[in-house]
Length: 177
Image (cartoon, rainbow, N blue to C red; front, side, top):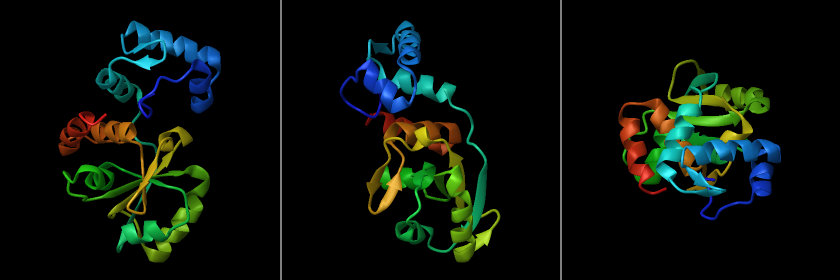
């Protein structure tokens, strides 16, 4: 709902979220009680983001690598991914120093990513973190400067969960949602 400007039908929300129509209706009732939506139209984007942040879990399992020129490697890669946190924020608004590159991938791709990363760098604590994500995390991702980046609402959630200066960057991005 935060990835589109127009209100979506319950059927469209059901299709996009891969949930039953009944579940969507029940969840919309919860959001309406919180005064975050009116039917399927978002009425308070900021509070809906806060609601989502409180619902979301800490990042799933991840692997770290030390890679020389990781952005160039990502641009050349044909594997599915989406940048988030520091590097994604830096591309969007140039506020945070991109001290680490976090990317979401799908679990079935983990072995292929591991081969690619170890072929081009070292395994262990480093400058790139690969995070296993569910397919919904990558919903609404977009391509900017040849790199795949999570949707703006997902980036805001991830930055807030990261804490510290990332929370400040998230606040700045909220003004754009």
